[in-house]
Image 1 (cartoon, rainbow, N blue to C red):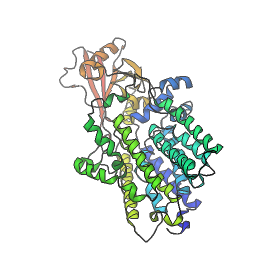
Image 2: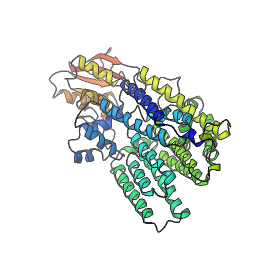
Image 3: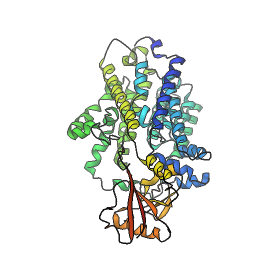
Image 4: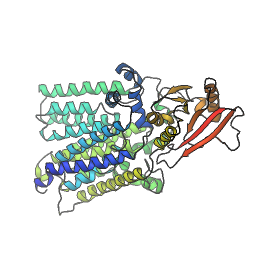
Length: 506
């Protein structure tokens, strides 16, 4: 297994690596432009006038409110979204510090993990509500070796984690179920007061989270999966674990985010590898209860993907975290002689050792690529567009977009935008509205624009993520004068470009 001192990093190493992580993260967010989801939560907080207003505005989110509460407090002092990004990387730096100090892995393992795709890029540079939950999960993991005496602490931390994101709820609930069953069945602590206080306490926090996650009946959350067939949903259900560990962005395409090189090269080959990859937990883990924990996470997450039809790397990451926490627990389960050898820097290169470090290496390379690509190219062109509008005094005009594609712009220009989809001034999205004519195409948008011009005395600005109007032929509408002012292209994500039009009555 190796000398235990190899796994124990000094405070100097922890602080030094954490400092480097923070500096690189700061440089990353200074070059990262917000996209819809990041701006959406920030605007929910910014434009809520009270806590009760925030509760009402978040009822269709499908997320616990904890991240929005933090942003609500932040936006009482500033409306500059950079401070959200700074807060986000501070939370992740703290999370990294906890992992570096407490996780029972070699320094090489830790470095590859914290600078891997999820920790260094997806859950760090992109400001969302994931890393808050990861922090509480890792804090709970630090007490796992003393779970007999710190069951209440673990239960409370996992309960807090479940109130960060629906995906993290699956992870925290699985950990809680595992340690509770161990305490009740193996340790025979059925009559222990701490056991039931911990279980009931976690259950209450879980219930609070579920009450926030479950949206009203008129939600539009499931509408995007209505046209997905059963046969299309099956691959989405069995491939997440493969996509979480063999995370190789397709560097041959400009919009590499949420892509997978193997899937794009050959879906049948990727499918075969996905099925084979399901053997990995059995190969890496040495204890039956942890193998069961791992497969339980894979099954539940697969059900989540089947129901939601979601398809993005940020969701797949939960299974990578399942694997890392399982390896963490594996070290503190059973006798020392049975502890997995790949956790230490050993000369003995076992299959486990090679397999795990290969996975870590893939994530490290993918994380570095995504980070550098984000610095070199705009994630979206929203910030460039907002700067252009301000420099040309166009931000004082009414600004319109089709719908939620204007959300990031609202964060940067500091005011609401006219959504042609709803014929109203808004900033964030509300997921309870069915599709309307206005978002289907040119006719609906022109109808909404005509309605807006009834109240606008001057021209206004319309912004689309594609070259929406044919300004050369002027066949859009005889009553309108439409002029393309500027176009900002090169966005990493799809629908991240911005085309700026000035529209007035002919």
